[in-house]
Length: 225
View 1 (cartoon, rainbow, N blue to C red):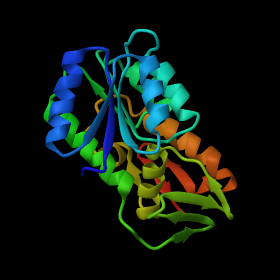
View 2: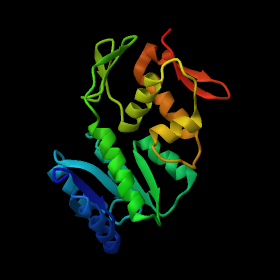
View 3: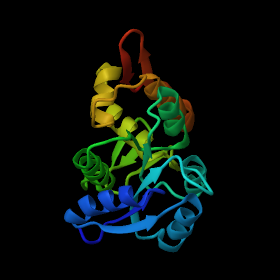
C-alpha cells in the first residue's frame, strides 16, 4: 500500500503521531497538517496523490467544516471527520457537506484504521462490467454514473448508496440494513442521514429519481418503472 497517501489534520501533535504510527504500520504514506490553513496548503500541493483525509473539526485559524467546504469545491477525495462533539446534529451536518465517515473522539486507533481501510477498499473498487439500469449507467471500475448519457457528480457516499440500491433491485431495504451495508459499520445516529442522501440522489438523477421508491415504514427500494 505504499502508493496510498493519507493526509492527517489535527491540531494536537500527540493525536497526529498516534494516527500516523498506526497507519504507517499498514504501509500508508502520511502527510500532516496542524491547522486548517496548513491543511488546504498541503492538499493543494499534493491533491493528485492524496487518497484520503482524516480531518479534525475544532482547529485554529480555520476549522474542519471550512476546510471541508473548500476541498469539496474541487475534489471528491474521501474524508473522515474527527470530532470530540459526537452530537447527532453535527453528524448530520457533516454528511450534508459531503463527509464520508464520522468518528467521535476518543476512538480506538484500530477501529480508525479499519474504517480507513474499508473506505479505501470501496474507493478502489473491483473492475466489473458497465451496467444500465433503465438509463442510469453505472461503471463500477471508473466509479462513474451517467443518466441518459450525461455524467452526474456523486459523493462517495451517494455513489455507494445508489450502487447498493441498484444491486438489490426490486428488494425493499430497511434503513437499518442500508446503514449497516453502505456505511459499513453500525451507525447509532439518526437514520435521517439516509433520507437526506436519498433526496440528493433523486435530485441528481432527475426524472430517473422516481426509480427510488419510499417504502413507508420500511425504507427504500430501487425499481425501474
